Image (cartoon, rainbow, N blue to C red; front, top):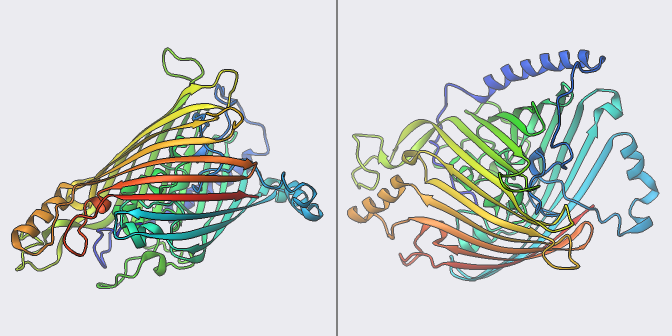
Length: 509
């Protein structure tokens, strides 16, 4: 569940996405023209690729996490296997799929269906069922039209059912990565152009940040949405930020000087649903119901990241990993959780204006290590990998100021089940000092119910079993401590810790 951001209503930043995107788009087009001209001649040199033997992992970097799962709800992952193989001659009626692939046109259908039950704690007990059909289309424009180094991608979601977090748990980190309001919506729609022996690329169109930035390959097996995109961004950015289910117009540049090292940056429209009028509390997913708002005039969001994939840690052999450092800056205006805008009063003071103090801009940093820690003897695709990810933002303008998640995944743990993946993970979101101080102020002035919010911690245990290639089932257990950071129920008492049981099935075609 994406909490409402603390961005001010009706605020306009002097630096908007529209101006930046036009400048970067012009640069990209000039690069494209240059690249198309150079495509007629062979590259002048070829850099060494010592990690070229590794497959591509979640997010587009070399797969250094041996335990990356077979299927995932995260759009950064290309799900392995297809149910087409199990269908035999019925897997490709009339040979249409093969004929299209020969011309550079490929499509993938992925359906995720899941049921969850809140068995104790949270707002109340209850059960939900939800599902998502993802229809993705990719076109190799070189094969289809002779446009060297270019490809087109789009996907459309059909989302149905209800989410457990929104209705029953009321936690910061959404129980399921597919939870969203029911809709049929466009997600991504972009063209990517590659240059210089595929070492530099430009992507322009409607893009989601969580398909390439801040991705932990070992974490894609988990069902909780926080493991996909650091939940600190989903909580503090306007409309939850440009992540599932709300992509937004953007331009992304990526440079890979070697197979190990990559630099990438993205300029996004900073609010995929737009700032509503004062007093309008309509959910962002309803304000951009079909994913076709294509907003370009909101304050911009700038993201940058560097990732280094290495062969092994000192003293180990064939245990690769990836170290990542990134940051973002939003050019909008954000409200203080504690301070009033008039006379320096506290928001909890009954005599305050009720208008929060506004700050110009918001920023965050994140760091991550994703490491294979054990490889099964005689196998290159089984073993354990672990990750640690930390993200922080200023405390004076955000609900949470520190986010940490960590976990371990093991693929092929049991004999005879080489493609099953077991995962154990933890998420910790700390309520910012300013927000905690507001709770204390509210108690002092008698305007709040208490108790004091502090943090939310989630534990998850999951097991993904492959039935046949392209079909997985996944039981899941989550335990949420202090839902919402310690929100009060309707009787003024802290919400009790919640226990959540779930079962997911994924079919990939």
